[in-house]
Each structure stands twice: as structure tokens, then as C-alpha cells.
Length: 231
Image (cartoon, rainbow, N blue to C red):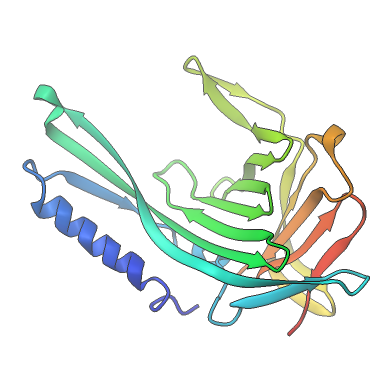
């Protein structure tokens, strides 16, 4: 994938961050950077090739998506120790990359990647309309979903105690998936199975993405299936 042009702004931000942390603070903070790995960046769409794409259903209704934004930044965290918390500062910067597409129906599709500090896994977040799936790329598991019906994580801390929840929704990896006579490789499918009592015919129940290609299929509870159109 050609990333030099697309991530130039992010690289500039990275340089500014280095400059600020080296000369803009009285106590010269120690900063660690946690980047999204090259392997995991393959889940981003190659927007030099796929700046626009479309999906259609069996009734020949076509939905057209177009890239609206693409950016890279860093999320920061800081911890301090010493007198008045002014000494021994530690800074941590986590790389974040996002691509956002919108369709003529004003439906939003986005791919979001976040760096992480080991042993935590780097996170892939997929959004289609108001459906969100958060996937741990290291441990290969779905860790959170959010829909119009609500949000459900697989676990969270309550009063400093880890509480685990049984997520019915899940993610599965396909080596290949054939759609409209095209075989896609390295496909990640998110299957929604929570909040079924609140589903409507238009509720999205499955979303599939392929490395570098992006959204290739989604399914609605009412039976409609939208498949990637070969341009």
C-alpha cells in the first residue's frame, strides 16, 4: 500500500510531538511510542485504488461509498511521580489511524486502528452506520459491540473488580470469501447476535471486510444482502 502521501500529516505531527517533548518541557519527559504494526495496517483500505466503491443487493439497488477523511494522530497519556508530580514524568503516545467513507444514503463506514502497549492487543474498530465492532488483533477476539440498542463489552472494571460478560456477537476469520465471482483473501466477518429482541428488518447483522479492500459485504436482519461490486 502507498502510505507516504496519505500519512504525511501524521508524520509531521509525530515530528512536532518529538520536538515538543525534547525542548518544550522543563524536566525533559521520557516518551514511549506505540505504533500500529505494518501487519495490522493491512486492514486499512488501499485508498489509492479504492477511494470509491459500491455494494449492491439482489434487487440491483446500489449503494456508493466515497472517502471523506483519512488521518493519523497520537493519543497521549501521562504519569508523574516526585515532588508535586513535576519529576520523573512518563509520556506514552499511541498511534491512531482512521479512514472514513460515506454513501449517498449518508451511511458511514469507517476503519479505525489503535496502537497498544503489550500485553494489550492493538485494536481494530469497524463502524457501519450505527453499528460498532471492536476487535483485539493480538488475541483475535471481539471485545465490544455497540448498536442503536446499546453497548456490550466482553468485560469491564466495576469497583476495581473485573466483571466479564457473555458476548453473543462474535468475529470469525475466513481465509477466502467469494462474492460476485471475486475471491477475497483474509476476510474478517463480524456477526451480531446481541439485543435480538430489538432487531428490525433494517438491522445490520453481519459485516465483512477484507485486507486492503475494506467493506465487501453486509447483511440485514430482513434478509437483504449487499455485496461488493467489481468496478
